[in-house]
Amino acid sequence: MRRLPRPSRLPTAALLLAAGLGLVACTTVVNPVTGKSEWSTMSPEREVALGRQAADQVQAEMGLVDDPALAAYVDQIGQRLARHSPRQDVAYHFAVANMAEPNAFALPGGWIYVSRGLLAITNSEAELANVIGHEIGHVAARHAAQRETRAAGVGILSALGTAAAGAVGGGTAAQAVGQLGQVAGAGYIASYGRDQERQSDQVGQTLAADAGWDPAAMAEFLATLDQESVRQMGQPRLPTFLDSHPVTAERVRDTAARASSLRVQPAAPIARDRSDFFERLDGLLIGPDPAEGVFQGALFLHPGLDFALEFPPGWATVNSKQAVAAQSPSRDAMIALEIQGQTGDPGAAAQAFAQQNQLELVDGRAGRIGGYAAYRARALAQSQQGRVALDLSWIAHPGGVFRIVGMTSESAFQGYEQALSQSALSFRPLRRAERNGIREKRLHSVRAQRGETLAALGQRTGNAWSVEQTAVANAIPAGTPLQAGRLVKIAVEVPYRPD
Image (cartoon, rainbow, N blue to C red):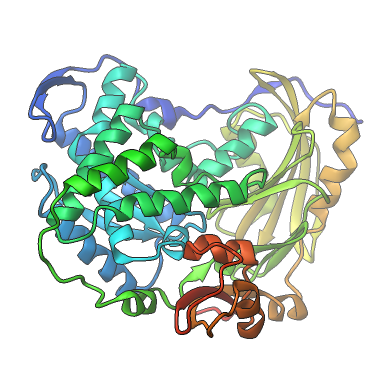
Protein backbone atom coordinates (compact mmCIF):
# COMPACT_ATOMS: atom_id res chain seq x y z
CA MET A 1 0.00 0.00 0.00
CA ARG A 2 1.37 3.44 -0.88
CA ARG A 3 1.99 6.05 1.74
CA LEU A 4 -1.10 7.72 3.13
CA PRO A 5 -1.09 11.22 4.65
CA ARG A 6 -1.45 12.13 8.30
CA PRO A 7 -4.99 11.43 9.52
CA SER A 8 -7.70 14.09 9.39
CA ARG A 9 -10.92 13.98 11.34
CA LEU A 10 -14.02 12.95 9.44
CA PRO A 11 -16.99 15.36 9.49
CA THR A 12 -19.61 14.75 12.14
CA ALA A 13 -23.39 14.70 11.74
CA ALA A 14 -23.71 18.24 12.99
CA LEU A 15 -27.29 18.76 11.91
CA LEU A 16 -28.37 15.64 13.77
CA LEU A 17 -27.16 17.21 17.01
CA ALA A 18 -28.06 20.82 16.33
CA ALA A 19 -31.52 20.59 17.78
CA GLY A 20 -30.14 19.14 20.99
CA LEU A 21 -27.54 21.81 21.78
CA GLY A 22 -28.03 24.40 24.44
CA LEU A 23 -30.69 24.82 27.08
CA VAL A 24 -34.29 23.94 26.30
CA ALA A 25 -37.12 25.90 27.88
CA CYS A 26 -39.97 23.98 29.47
CA THR A 27 -43.61 24.90 29.36
CA THR A 28 -46.82 23.40 30.66
CA VAL A 29 -49.30 22.07 28.08
CA VAL A 30 -52.52 20.11 28.32
CA ASN A 31 -52.33 16.72 26.60
CA PRO A 32 -55.32 16.49 24.24
CA VAL A 33 -55.72 12.74 24.80
CA THR A 34 -55.47 12.55 28.58
CA GLY A 35 -56.68 16.07 29.40
CA LYS A 36 -53.87 16.35 31.93
CA SER A 37 -51.19 19.03 32.21
CA GLU A 38 -47.64 17.94 31.49
CA TRP A 39 -44.21 19.54 31.23
CA SER A 40 -42.86 19.82 27.70
CA THR A 41 -39.71 21.19 26.09
CA MET A 42 -41.58 21.46 22.79
CA SER A 43 -44.28 24.05 22.31
CA PRO A 44 -47.10 23.23 19.88
CA GLU A 45 -45.72 25.90 17.54
CA ARG A 46 -42.25 24.38 17.54
CA GLU A 47 -43.76 20.93 17.10
CA VAL A 48 -45.44 22.05 13.87
CA ALA A 49 -42.29 23.78 12.63
CA LEU A 50 -40.14 20.69 13.23
CA GLY A 51 -42.75 18.47 11.61
CA ARG A 52 -42.85 20.67 8.52
CA GLN A 53 -39.05 20.55 8.27
CA ALA A 54 -39.01 16.76 8.60
CA ALA A 55 -41.84 16.46 6.06
CA ASP A 56 -39.74 18.35 3.54
CA GLN A 57 -36.91 15.90 4.16
CA VAL A 58 -39.20 12.90 3.75
CA GLN A 59 -40.34 14.18 0.37
CA ALA A 60 -36.80 15.00 -0.76
CA GLU A 61 -35.02 11.91 0.53
CA MET A 62 -37.67 9.19 0.49
CA GLY A 63 -40.16 10.55 -2.03
CA LEU A 64 -43.92 10.21 -2.33
CA VAL A 65 -45.90 7.88 -4.59
CA ASP A 66 -46.92 9.79 -7.71
CA ASP A 67 -50.52 8.57 -7.92
CA PRO A 68 -53.01 11.41 -7.36
CA ALA A 69 -56.02 9.09 -7.06
CA LEU A 70 -54.35 6.89 -4.45
CA ALA A 71 -53.01 9.90 -2.53
CA ALA A 72 -56.48 11.46 -2.52
CA TYR A 73 -58.01 8.21 -1.25
CA VAL A 74 -55.55 7.92 1.65
CA ASP A 75 -56.08 11.59 2.47
CA GLN A 76 -59.84 11.13 2.42
CA ILE A 77 -59.60 8.31 4.97
CA GLY A 78 -57.19 10.34 7.09
CA GLN A 79 -59.25 13.53 7.08
CA ARG A 80 -62.40 11.62 8.05
CA LEU A 81 -60.54 10.13 11.01
CA ALA A 82 -58.90 13.45 11.91
CA ARG A 83 -62.29 15.12 12.33
CA HIS A 84 -62.75 12.89 15.38
CA SER A 85 -59.25 13.43 16.78
CA PRO A 86 -59.06 14.76 20.34
CA ARG A 87 -56.44 17.18 19.06
CA GLN A 88 -57.70 19.88 16.72
CA ASP A 89 -54.99 22.56 17.01
CA VAL A 90 -52.96 21.11 14.12
CA ALA A 91 -53.70 20.49 10.45
CA TYR A 92 -53.37 16.82 9.53
CA HIS A 93 -51.58 15.83 6.33
CA PHE A 94 -51.63 12.33 4.83
CA ALA A 95 -49.45 10.90 2.07
CA VAL A 96 -48.11 7.64 0.61
CA ALA A 97 -44.35 7.28 1.05
CA ASN A 98 -42.38 5.70 -1.78
CA MET A 99 -41.06 2.95 0.47
CA ALA A 100 -41.13 -0.73 -0.44
CA GLU A 101 -41.19 -1.92 3.18
CA PRO A 102 -44.52 -2.05 5.06
CA ASN A 103 -44.49 1.04 7.24
CA ALA A 104 -46.47 3.91 8.68
CA PHE A 105 -45.13 6.83 10.68
CA ALA A 106 -46.14 10.20 12.06
CA LEU A 107 -44.08 13.36 12.25
CA PRO A 108 -44.66 16.04 14.90
CA GLY A 109 -47.45 18.47 14.14
CA GLY A 110 -49.67 16.23 12.00
CA TRP A 111 -47.73 14.82 9.02
CA ILE A 112 -48.68 11.16 8.63
CA TYR A 113 -47.44 8.61 6.08
CA VAL A 114 -48.24 5.09 5.01
CA SER A 115 -45.83 3.31 2.68
CA ARG A 116 -46.76 1.62 -0.58
CA GLY A 117 -45.36 -1.56 0.99
CA LEU A 118 -47.92 -1.32 3.76
CA LEU A 119 -50.77 -0.76 1.32
CA ALA A 120 -49.77 -3.91 -0.56
CA ILE A 121 -50.44 -6.12 2.47
CA THR A 122 -53.59 -4.31 3.63
CA ASN A 123 -56.77 -6.27 3.01
CA SER A 124 -59.55 -3.83 3.80
CA GLU A 125 -60.28 -0.16 4.12
CA ALA A 126 -60.96 -0.73 7.82
CA GLU A 127 -57.42 -2.08 8.32
CA LEU A 128 -55.94 0.96 6.62
CA ALA A 129 -58.18 3.30 8.64
CA ASN A 130 -57.06 1.71 11.91
CA VAL A 131 -53.37 2.08 10.99
CA ILE A 132 -53.85 5.74 10.06
CA GLY A 133 -55.89 6.26 13.22
CA HIS A 134 -53.02 4.79 15.25
CA GLU A 135 -50.63 7.34 13.75
CA ILE A 136 -53.09 10.15 14.45
CA GLY A 137 -52.99 8.89 18.03
CA HIS A 138 -49.24 9.54 18.22
CA VAL A 139 -49.78 13.12 17.01
CA ALA A 140 -52.81 13.74 19.22
CA ALA A 141 -51.03 12.52 22.36
CA ARG A 142 -47.91 14.56 21.50
CA HIS A 143 -45.68 11.51 21.78
CA ALA A 144 -42.84 13.14 19.86
CA ALA A 145 -42.82 16.04 22.33
CA GLN A 146 -42.85 13.58 25.23
CA ARG A 147 -39.81 11.78 23.79
CA GLU A 148 -37.89 15.02 23.45
CA THR A 149 -38.80 16.15 26.95
CA ARG A 150 -37.60 12.85 28.41
CA ALA A 151 -34.43 12.99 26.34
CA ALA A 152 -33.75 16.46 27.83
CA GLY A 153 -31.42 17.77 25.20
CA VAL A 154 -31.17 15.08 22.54
CA GLY A 155 -33.61 16.99 20.35
CA ILE A 156 -36.41 15.85 18.14
CA LEU A 157 -34.38 16.13 14.94
CA SER A 158 -31.90 13.67 16.41
CA ALA A 159 -34.73 11.40 17.51
CA LEU A 160 -36.17 11.46 14.03
CA GLY A 161 -32.75 10.63 12.62
CA THR A 162 -32.62 13.29 9.93
CA ALA A 163 -30.11 12.10 7.38
CA ALA A 164 -27.68 14.97 7.58
CA ALA A 165 -24.48 12.94 7.63
CA GLY A 166 -22.90 11.94 4.34
CA ALA A 167 -21.67 8.48 3.52
CA VAL A 168 -18.31 9.11 5.17
CA GLY A 169 -19.60 11.32 7.95
CA GLY A 170 -19.99 8.94 10.84
CA GLY A 171 -16.69 7.24 11.59
CA THR A 172 -16.71 3.57 10.66
CA ALA A 173 -17.95 1.80 7.58
CA ALA A 174 -20.74 0.11 9.51
CA GLN A 175 -21.99 3.46 10.79
CA ALA A 176 -21.92 4.88 7.29
CA VAL A 177 -24.04 2.09 5.87
CA GLY A 178 -26.39 2.52 8.81
CA GLN A 179 -26.77 6.18 7.94
CA LEU A 180 -27.65 5.25 4.37
CA GLY A 181 -30.42 3.12 5.78
CA GLN A 182 -31.71 6.23 7.54
CA VAL A 183 -31.66 8.15 4.29
CA ALA A 184 -33.85 5.42 2.85
CA GLY A 185 -36.49 6.01 5.47
CA ALA A 186 -35.40 4.32 8.64
CA GLY A 187 -34.48 7.56 10.34
CA TYR A 188 -37.97 9.00 10.22
CA ILE A 189 -39.48 6.09 12.13
CA ALA A 190 -39.74 7.00 15.77
CA SER A 191 -39.52 4.33 18.44
CA TYR A 192 -42.24 4.77 21.02
CA GLY A 193 -42.55 3.32 24.49
CA ARG A 194 -44.91 0.47 25.23
CA ASP A 195 -47.39 2.73 27.01
CA GLN A 196 -47.38 5.15 24.07
CA GLU A 197 -48.13 2.28 21.69
CA ARG A 198 -51.01 1.11 23.84
CA GLN A 199 -52.35 4.65 23.99
CA SER A 200 -52.14 5.08 20.21
CA ASP A 201 -53.86 1.74 19.65
CA GLN A 202 -56.70 2.91 21.88
CA VAL A 203 -56.97 6.31 20.19
CA GLY A 204 -56.72 4.81 16.71
CA GLN A 205 -59.39 2.17 17.29
CA THR A 206 -61.71 4.74 18.88
CA LEU A 207 -61.23 7.09 15.93
CA ALA A 208 -61.94 4.24 13.51
CA ALA A 209 -65.15 3.30 15.30
CA ASP A 210 -66.29 6.93 15.56
CA ALA A 211 -65.65 7.39 11.82
CA GLY A 212 -67.57 4.25 10.85
CA TRP A 213 -64.85 1.59 10.47
CA ASP A 214 -64.60 -1.72 12.32
CA PRO A 215 -61.96 -1.37 15.09
CA ALA A 216 -61.43 -5.16 15.04
CA ALA A 217 -59.51 -4.65 11.79
CA MET A 218 -56.55 -3.37 13.82
CA ALA A 219 -55.99 -6.80 15.37
CA GLU A 220 -56.37 -8.41 11.93
CA PHE A 221 -53.76 -6.10 10.45
CA LEU A 222 -51.34 -6.66 13.35
CA ALA A 223 -51.64 -10.41 12.79
CA THR A 224 -50.71 -9.94 9.11
CA LEU A 225 -47.73 -7.81 10.09
CA ASP A 226 -46.60 -10.43 12.54
CA GLN A 227 -46.64 -13.04 9.77
CA GLU A 228 -44.73 -10.68 7.48
CA SER A 229 -42.09 -10.24 10.18
CA VAL A 230 -41.71 -14.02 10.48
CA ARG A 231 -41.45 -14.34 6.69
CA GLN A 232 -38.69 -11.72 6.48
CA MET A 233 -36.77 -13.03 9.49
CA GLY A 234 -33.09 -13.24 8.69
CA GLN A 235 -33.43 -11.29 5.45
CA PRO A 236 -31.61 -7.96 5.04
CA ARG A 237 -34.20 -5.21 4.93
CA LEU A 238 -34.97 -1.66 5.94
CA PRO A 239 -37.05 -1.08 9.09
CA THR A 240 -40.77 -1.75 8.98
CA PHE A 241 -43.82 -0.80 11.00
CA LEU A 242 -42.98 -3.77 13.23
CA ASP A 243 -39.65 -2.29 14.28
CA SER A 244 -41.16 0.96 15.52
CA HIS A 245 -44.51 -0.58 16.57
CA PRO A 246 -43.56 -4.05 17.85
CA VAL A 247 -46.39 -6.58 17.71
CA THR A 248 -46.88 -8.76 20.74
CA ALA A 249 -49.50 -11.36 21.52
CA GLU A 250 -50.70 -9.01 24.25
CA ARG A 251 -51.16 -6.18 21.77
CA VAL A 252 -53.13 -8.34 19.34
CA ARG A 253 -55.26 -9.64 22.19
CA ASP A 254 -55.86 -6.17 23.64
CA THR A 255 -56.87 -4.61 20.32
CA ALA A 256 -59.26 -7.48 19.62
CA ALA A 257 -60.81 -7.17 23.10
CA ARG A 258 -61.10 -3.39 22.86
CA ALA A 259 -62.88 -3.66 19.53
CA SER A 260 -65.71 -5.62 21.12
CA SER A 261 -66.34 -2.78 23.55
CA LEU A 262 -66.46 0.00 20.93
CA ARG A 263 -69.60 1.03 19.14
CA VAL A 264 -69.15 1.61 15.42
CA GLN A 265 -71.00 4.70 14.28
CA PRO A 266 -73.02 4.23 11.09
CA ALA A 267 -71.16 5.61 8.09
CA ALA A 268 -70.72 4.38 4.54
CA PRO A 269 -67.19 3.26 3.63
CA ILE A 270 -65.30 5.25 1.04
CA ALA A 271 -64.54 2.13 -1.01
CA ARG A 272 -67.86 0.41 -1.67
CA ASP A 273 -66.58 -3.11 -0.99
CA ARG A 274 -63.49 -5.31 -1.05
CA SER A 275 -63.41 -5.26 -4.84
CA ASP A 276 -63.49 -1.45 -4.90
CA PHE A 277 -60.73 -1.31 -2.26
CA PHE A 278 -58.47 -3.62 -4.25
CA GLU A 279 -59.21 -1.67 -7.42
CA ARG A 280 -57.88 1.49 -5.76
CA LEU A 281 -54.60 -0.33 -5.11
CA ASP A 282 -54.39 -1.82 -8.59
CA GLY A 283 -51.10 -1.09 -10.32
CA LEU A 284 -49.30 -0.17 -7.09
CA LEU A 285 -45.54 -0.59 -7.41
CA ILE A 286 -44.19 -3.46 -5.30
CA GLY A 287 -40.58 -3.78 -4.22
CA PRO A 288 -37.69 -1.59 -5.42
CA ASP A 289 -38.50 1.41 -7.58
CA PRO A 290 -36.48 1.12 -10.82
CA ALA A 291 -36.60 4.90 -11.15
CA GLU A 292 -34.23 4.98 -8.16
CA GLY A 293 -32.06 2.17 -9.52
CA VAL A 294 -32.13 -1.59 -9.08
CA PHE A 295 -29.72 -4.32 -8.12
CA GLN A 296 -29.15 -7.39 -10.27
CA GLY A 297 -26.96 -9.36 -7.94
CA ALA A 298 -23.96 -7.15 -7.21
CA LEU A 299 -24.57 -5.00 -10.29
CA PHE A 300 -26.44 -1.73 -9.69
CA LEU A 301 -28.32 -0.27 -12.67
CA HIS A 302 -29.82 3.22 -12.72
CA PRO A 303 -31.92 3.79 -15.84
CA GLY A 304 -32.81 7.39 -14.97
CA LEU A 305 -29.23 8.55 -14.54
CA ASP A 306 -27.86 6.07 -17.11
CA PHE A 307 -25.07 4.35 -15.22
CA ALA A 308 -24.04 0.96 -13.89
CA LEU A 309 -21.75 0.12 -10.98
CA GLU A 310 -20.47 -3.28 -9.90
CA PHE A 311 -20.05 -3.91 -6.18
CA PRO A 312 -17.96 -6.79 -4.82
CA PRO A 313 -19.91 -10.06 -4.88
CA GLY A 314 -21.37 -11.13 -1.56
CA TRP A 315 -21.47 -7.62 -0.08
CA ALA A 316 -24.71 -6.41 1.51
CA THR A 317 -26.21 -3.56 -0.52
CA VAL A 318 -28.57 -0.69 0.21
CA ASN A 319 -30.12 1.86 -2.14
CA SER A 320 -31.68 5.18 -1.25
CA LYS A 321 -32.76 8.32 -3.01
CA GLN A 322 -29.48 9.98 -2.08
CA ALA A 323 -26.89 7.22 -2.25
CA VAL A 324 -26.20 3.57 -3.02
CA ALA A 325 -23.76 1.56 -0.93
CA ALA A 326 -22.42 -1.86 -0.09
CA GLN A 327 -20.87 -3.36 3.03
CA SER A 328 -18.44 -6.24 3.28
CA PRO A 329 -19.63 -9.52 4.81
CA SER A 330 -17.43 -8.93 7.85
CA ARG A 331 -18.83 -5.37 8.17
CA ASP A 332 -15.39 -3.77 8.17
CA ALA A 333 -15.45 -2.08 4.75
CA MET A 334 -17.92 -0.18 2.61
CA ILE A 335 -18.35 1.47 -0.77
CA ALA A 336 -20.79 4.33 -1.31
CA LEU A 337 -21.76 6.33 -4.40
CA GLU A 338 -23.36 9.77 -4.23
CA ILE A 339 -23.80 12.79 -6.46
CA GLN A 340 -21.63 15.59 -5.09
CA GLY A 341 -22.96 18.36 -7.30
CA GLN A 342 -23.46 19.53 -10.84
CA THR A 343 -21.18 18.11 -13.47
CA GLY A 344 -17.84 19.82 -14.00
CA ASP A 345 -14.14 19.35 -13.34
CA PRO A 346 -13.75 16.18 -11.22
CA GLY A 347 -10.38 17.40 -9.93
CA ALA A 348 -11.97 20.59 -8.64
CA ALA A 349 -14.72 18.54 -7.02
CA ALA A 350 -12.05 16.43 -5.28
CA GLN A 351 -10.29 19.48 -3.89
CA ALA A 352 -13.57 20.99 -2.71
CA PHE A 353 -14.48 17.78 -0.89
CA ALA A 354 -11.04 17.52 0.68
CA GLN A 355 -11.13 21.11 1.89
CA GLN A 356 -14.65 20.79 3.27
CA ASN A 357 -13.79 17.63 5.19
CA GLN A 358 -10.21 18.54 6.15
CA LEU A 359 -8.71 15.66 4.19
CA GLU A 360 -5.23 15.54 2.65
CA LEU A 361 -5.42 13.74 -0.69
CA VAL A 362 -2.48 11.69 -1.94
CA ASP A 363 -1.79 9.82 -5.17
CA GLY A 364 -4.23 12.16 -6.92
CA ARG A 365 -4.45 11.60 -10.64
CA ALA A 366 -6.75 12.56 -13.47
CA GLY A 367 -7.98 9.98 -15.95
CA ARG A 368 -11.13 8.45 -17.35
CA ILE A 369 -13.63 5.98 -15.89
CA GLY A 370 -16.32 4.52 -18.12
CA GLY A 371 -15.48 7.05 -20.80
CA TYR A 372 -15.99 10.02 -18.44
CA ALA A 373 -13.37 12.43 -17.09
CA ALA A 374 -12.43 11.30 -13.61
CA TYR A 375 -10.10 11.96 -10.70
CA ARG A 376 -8.89 9.38 -8.18
CA ALA A 377 -7.08 9.80 -4.87
CA ARG A 378 -6.62 8.33 -1.42
CA ALA A 379 -6.83 9.79 2.05
CA LEU A 380 -6.54 8.86 5.69
CA ALA A 381 -8.97 10.10 8.30
CA GLN A 382 -9.46 9.76 12.02
CA SER A 383 -12.69 8.30 13.36
CA GLN A 384 -13.77 7.48 16.89
CA GLN A 385 -12.80 3.87 16.18
CA GLY A 386 -9.36 4.67 14.80
CA ARG A 387 -7.69 5.56 11.51
CA VAL A 388 -9.79 5.02 8.40
CA ALA A 389 -8.38 4.67 4.88
CA LEU A 390 -10.36 6.07 1.95
CA ASP A 391 -10.27 5.18 -1.74
CA LEU A 392 -11.90 8.16 -3.51
CA SER A 393 -13.13 8.70 -7.06
CA TRP A 394 -14.89 11.63 -8.74
CA ILE A 395 -16.53 11.12 -12.15
CA ALA A 396 -17.87 13.91 -14.38
CA HIS A 397 -21.12 12.24 -15.47
CA PRO A 398 -23.72 14.30 -17.41
CA GLY A 399 -26.06 13.89 -14.42
CA GLY A 400 -23.54 15.42 -12.03
CA VAL A 401 -20.19 14.73 -10.42
CA PHE A 402 -20.43 11.26 -8.91
CA ARG A 403 -18.32 10.56 -5.84
CA ILE A 404 -17.42 6.97 -4.99
CA VAL A 405 -15.96 6.40 -1.53
CA GLY A 406 -14.35 3.12 -0.50
CA MET A 407 -13.71 2.96 3.22
CA THR A 408 -12.09 0.57 5.66
CA SER A 409 -9.71 0.70 8.60
CA GLU A 410 -6.10 1.58 7.90
CA SER A 411 -4.99 -1.89 8.99
CA ALA A 412 -7.47 -3.63 6.65
CA PHE A 413 -6.92 -1.40 3.63
CA GLN A 414 -4.36 -3.57 1.89
CA GLY A 415 -6.74 -6.54 1.96
CA TYR A 416 -9.58 -4.49 0.48
CA GLU A 417 -7.56 -2.24 -1.82
CA GLN A 418 -8.25 -4.19 -5.00
CA ALA A 419 -11.97 -4.65 -4.33
CA LEU A 420 -12.48 -0.94 -3.58
CA SER A 421 -10.56 0.12 -6.67
CA GLN A 422 -12.22 -2.37 -9.03
CA SER A 423 -15.67 -1.31 -7.93
CA ALA A 424 -14.96 2.37 -8.58
CA LEU A 425 -13.42 1.62 -11.98
CA SER A 426 -16.49 -0.44 -12.99
CA PHE A 427 -18.62 2.72 -13.28
CA ARG A 428 -19.94 3.00 -16.85
CA PRO A 429 -22.98 3.93 -18.96
CA LEU A 430 -25.93 1.54 -18.99
CA ARG A 431 -26.03 -0.91 -21.89
CA ARG A 432 -29.15 -1.11 -24.04
CA ALA A 433 -29.78 -4.75 -23.16
CA GLU A 434 -29.49 -3.92 -19.46
CA ARG A 435 -31.95 -1.05 -19.77
CA ASN A 436 -34.44 -3.15 -21.71
CA GLY A 437 -34.10 -5.98 -19.20
CA ILE A 438 -35.13 -3.96 -16.15
CA ARG A 439 -38.48 -5.11 -14.79
CA GLU A 440 -40.79 -4.09 -11.98
CA LYS A 441 -43.62 -5.66 -10.00
CA ARG A 442 -47.13 -4.23 -9.89
CA LEU A 443 -50.04 -5.17 -7.64
CA HIS A 444 -53.13 -6.71 -9.23
CA SER A 445 -56.07 -8.72 -7.96
CA VAL A 446 -57.55 -11.82 -9.57
CA ARG A 447 -60.49 -14.07 -8.76
CA ALA A 448 -59.83 -17.62 -7.60
CA GLN A 449 -61.40 -20.66 -9.14
CA ARG A 450 -63.28 -23.05 -6.89
CA GLY A 451 -60.96 -25.22 -4.80
CA GLU A 452 -57.86 -23.58 -6.24
CA THR A 453 -54.85 -23.25 -3.95
CA LEU A 454 -52.59 -20.23 -3.86
CA ALA A 455 -49.91 -22.27 -5.60
CA ALA A 456 -52.27 -23.20 -8.44
CA LEU A 457 -53.61 -19.66 -8.67
CA GLY A 458 -50.09 -18.29 -8.85
CA GLN A 459 -49.15 -20.64 -11.65
CA ARG A 460 -52.31 -19.80 -13.61
CA THR A 461 -51.96 -16.02 -13.26
CA GLY A 462 -48.18 -15.63 -13.48
CA ASN A 463 -47.93 -14.42 -9.90
CA ALA A 464 -44.42 -13.11 -9.21
CA TRP A 465 -44.85 -13.52 -5.47
CA SER A 466 -44.00 -16.78 -3.77
CA VAL A 467 -46.83 -18.77 -2.23
CA GLU A 468 -45.63 -17.61 1.18
CA GLN A 469 -45.63 -13.94 0.16
CA THR A 470 -49.07 -14.26 -1.39
CA ALA A 471 -50.44 -15.97 1.71
CA VAL A 472 -49.18 -13.21 4.02
CA ALA A 473 -50.30 -10.36 1.77
CA ASN A 474 -53.82 -11.81 1.57
CA ALA A 475 -54.05 -13.16 5.15
CA ILE A 476 -54.82 -16.62 3.76
CA PRO A 477 -53.19 -19.85 5.01
CA ALA A 478 -50.98 -21.13 2.20
CA GLY A 479 -52.64 -24.50 1.69
CA THR A 480 -56.28 -23.44 2.06
CA PRO A 481 -58.58 -24.25 -0.90
CA LEU A 482 -60.06 -20.97 -2.15
CA GLN A 483 -63.70 -20.18 -2.69
CA ALA A 484 -64.75 -19.49 -6.25
CA GLY A 485 -64.58 -15.79 -7.04
CA ARG A 486 -62.48 -14.79 -4.03
CA LEU A 487 -60.29 -11.82 -4.79
CA VAL A 488 -56.59 -12.46 -4.29
CA LYS A 489 -53.81 -9.90 -4.59
CA ILE A 490 -50.87 -10.96 -6.72
CA ALA A 491 -47.71 -9.36 -8.09
CA VAL A 492 -47.27 -9.13 -11.85
CA GLU A 493 -43.81 -8.58 -13.30
CA VAL A 494 -43.73 -6.15 -16.26
CA PRO A 495 -41.01 -4.34 -18.21
CA TYR A 496 -39.98 -1.06 -16.61
CA ARG A 497 -41.14 1.92 -18.60
CA PRO A 498 -40.13 5.33 -17.25
CA ASP A 499 -42.79 8.00 -17.14
